Length: 93
Image (cartoon, rainbow, N blue to C red; front, side, top):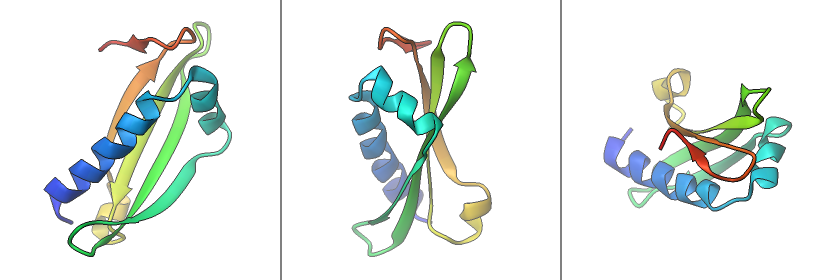
């Protein structure tokens, strides 16, 4: 997997996620989004966007985006995450 290409694709997806409202991100708790993206090199990547409760009491959500090329990286995909509070603010940034 081309690390630079994969990181760029992942960053693009994270930018879109960060632009979503809290309730839209909360929908990822029940139904992760999976898509296939062809990189500039022609490599086909799978991108998965998912969420889980970071702290159920505060309502904060941990949002995770991961990417792999279907090879061995599928067992250890490259990933990045962020936490969002119910008011839409980022936690820990």
